[in-house]
Image (tube, rainbow, N blue to C red; front, side, top):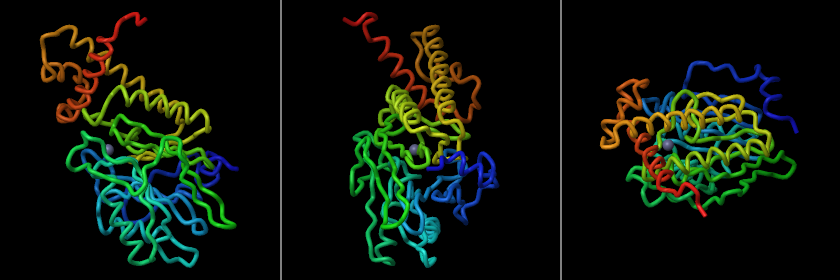
Length: 311
Ligand SMILES: [Zn+2]
């Protein structure tokens, strides 16, 4: 089975040329992976949410992260999921990496579109939003995906496409990453981004879980020889293992900085620690950075509360 690096090499060099972002057309990344970016660029979404289609005209497609409930985007996604005769809506399943408003609200209307036009109802997979999810992040899939479960696409005579689900709480408690086994690709949702930093927003977000999930992704990428990470925002990331290691080091460095600021001013509060711990970050980002700071403070206090020599 060819690996993704070879296929990308064959196609257009080590990575597809990162052209200007557009939302009009799906971009083929591999013979069996297309990316369609939703028209929702912004402060928190970068160039917009990447919806991915995995599969081909023979097998049908799995739609990953349909994005916001944007009629035009869902219409384009439906069109891009082509049958062999060129007609759209060849969607066998929809998977949401997590329930934030730029990821999952498009799932139900995309399903309805397939039902109305194609007469079949693709199953919506994912994990239900947790008890602390914000009001705009409520979500209930048709089918809960278990950690380690396979979502399998195979039609008679067609090539199989298999996604391995990896439960990765941290950015959101119901976050799932998906590993395309045949090609060694990791769909990282918002757990790993390219060009921006994932916000950890407690209590649904949790820094200890986030770091543990990075370790789980490292193990999965080693076990399945993953080359590339395809994030929900931004371009593909090469060197999956290196990118994860860098991200973890960045988080731990930030945490060490926050711990030092707290130690220097133990009577202070997060609003006083924030400008010192994030003095290298644009002040306009501080309101968002404060959420991640609170997540680090929670983890620092948890580690401090542990006995030094547990028996
Ligand atoms: Zn998110």
